[in-house]
Image 1: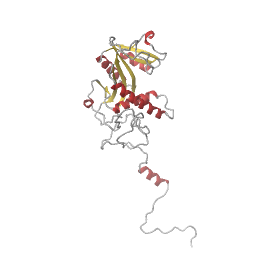
Image 2 (image 1 turned 135 degrees about the horizontal axis):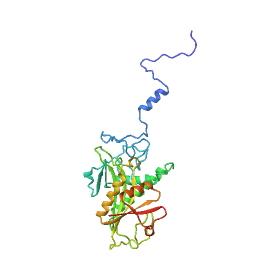
Image 3 (image 1 turned 30 degrees about the vertical axis):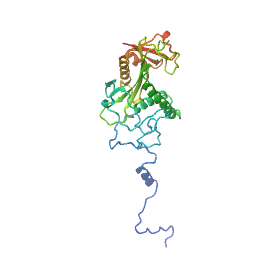
Image 4 (image 1 turned 90 degrees about the vertical axis):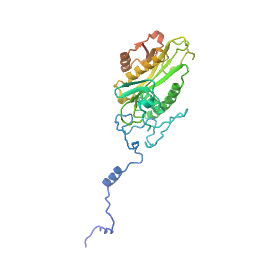
Length: 304
């Protein structure tokens, strides 16, 4: 009689199931993980763009938790619910005809125009948050900081653009212009704001961004209007394609159409790429004695 372990006979009809790491590995690879994000096909027509804002795995949608499925049709609204909004990241980009903009500028495969829907305002706010925290990628809480910054900016931006008494405030966005079916999320690549107004009493030049105004909020209608450009931002992957310069040219045209004689912008003294850009367009340094500039920011002016 043979000695050793005895293998029990296989039951009739039973299958031999392979065991081990290889089989388990194949099982896991064949089925999606519970928290794995799924790409929305939008009715079977997948968006084929690979240079979009959040196409790489590991990047979350602006304001959308990575634990949420992309299949959701309605995304979380900004953190500060100070006004109604209907934000949906799967909303398709409006065509040039559908956007019905008064100001627009076509260049290359992009178009610069006014922001017309909430999603465009939200992406504009998110681009500003990314620009604000661009040098803090190593901070473990940076995504939370960006979300809060973008949420606050989104509501403030909507409020500024809806307030037309005494000033004209416009948010411009640069949007991809092609034949692909794109969502708004994957279309907006740049943004800036321009404000056209009369100077306040006692005001000679616009205040620096973020500084509280020292002048009373009474406009001088007998003084010529001026335009003030702020929040110039372009997504990292879309830079060096003329997006910022074309948005600036559109903002200058819009300011002129609204009666501005001079257009101003602040620039950091160490921001050499911005200096080169503004110099190419025609901005000139304003006299420091009367411009109320800080040691870090300088005021530039464009005159027609």
